[in-house]
Each structure stands twice: as C-alpha cells, then as structure tokens.
Length: 314
Image (tube, rainbow, N blue to C red):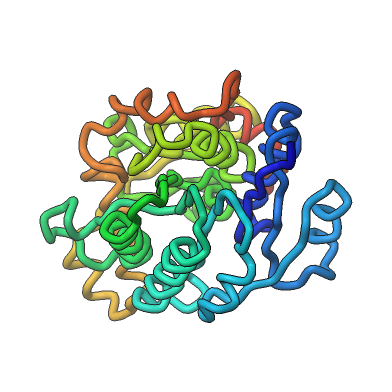
C-alpha cells in the first residue's frame, strides 16, 4: 500500500522540522506517511539532510496560491505555519493562511493542521487589541471553520517558546546576577512553555493520526506549565549560580506610551500571560484535553530537560 503524503511547510524550521522528525523517526508513522518538505531553498544543508532521510523536497511561495496548490497536490495532509515577524503584517499573514486553506480545499486535501493561536482581542473582550501575531493566525482558523466543508482542520497552538528564555535572561548591572525581568507574578502567574523543536511534532503528528476525531480541535501545545519563579530556581540548580526573577510593572498605558508598534505588541503579549494565562483564564487546568492528541507513548520535555541542554553564558 502506498504511503500517504504529508506536506510540511517550514520543514527546516522549528515547528515544521519537529513535525518532520516526529514522523520520520517513528517507525509506525514513517510506515504510513511520506514527507514532502516545503523549503525556500532545497539546496541548503538542512533541506538536503531531510532529503537524505527520505523526504521529498519542494518549494512554494505562500503569497502565490497557485504555487501553494502545486506544492500540496496529491497530499493526504498538510501542516502549515506562517511567520508574522517576517513582515509584521496582520493582513499579510492572514492572506498567506487563507491561501493555504483555499489551496487545500481546491486540491482535495483530507486533513490540514494549522499552526494557530488564540484570538486575543476576542478572548480579552477588547482589553488587549495589539497582539497581532496571535489574532492574525486566529483569523485564519476562523476562516477555515467557515469554509472547510469536508476538509478536516485541526489547530495546533504553540505555547511560549522555551528557546526565547536564553536571550531574555541578562545580568542586572546593579546586582550582578543573571535576571529574568517580566511583568508576571513570580508564584501565581501560570506560564505555558514548549520546547518547540522537540515537542511540536508530538502534537501535530498525533493530530494527523486522530483524523476526523481532531476536526475543529484546538490543541494547547504545552511541554510544561510553570510559575516564573520556577524558571530561575531550576537554573540556580543547574548552573550553581544565583539567577533571579524580578517582577516589573507593565500596563496597557505604558505599552502605548512606548510609541513603537512592535514594543507595544510584545508588552501586551506579556500582559496576556500575566492576566489571561496565554490561552485564557483557567486553561492550565485543561491541558489533559489537549494531551490526549499526543502520539502514543510521547514524552514531553520539561523546562529542566531543556535548560540542561543550554550552554548558559551570563
């Protein structure tokens, strides 16, 4: 029996790469699915490495729906992720996602797994309106639900990247200690985190396996829920250094006064975590609903697992 083709956008990146690895490195999954890896440049080492593992390489321009249709033709499933930060355009990212949805409909794809996020403006009843890189992806999900018809669409929503933290912990010039400064309460804020390269594929491959059971499902992609103080306490244990967490004040008004659109967006993003636990109030208690879609016998990374692999330099 021929294998079903799973076309993966961003195949050499974090989420796409993790999806590819989860399938190719799992004998049960690799016996069912063949990977078509969409990359910008198939000649680059990362792309050639995928080809050496049996992936088919292809190129596509997300701004050109004809290109997307050609790239996914003949596929059973598609994993799609877009990058808001390339253009910082909410409308541009929405159009790319819409192109993917429309192309999947046109080509008769059976299952689309879309990398999405919550609609922050709606979730916060208009309290936070500037977190565009969430709202643009959520807009694509809303569009997909309106038009999908027989297309199965599942939504993977990645949590806060653990890989962000090495660049955010800096030496405080006053104390001399490595310090993480964020507008979060150290012991009551719930922060969902994901080892994006390791754990994305555990969810996305699991969604493909779930098939119609995963239709319309929004999965919280979380490796571990932690309080901010736990982040630095674990680093103290690992490194033997004094690593501190400092709660810094932040408000919507402060963010608006920055006069910088991206800085305002990122500040509201941190307030989202503080006041709404990223996915919404109380969502830390609902993680098991998402984890039932993990591939069988999956072992997610903890913050300690991730931190032990980092060469910490203060």
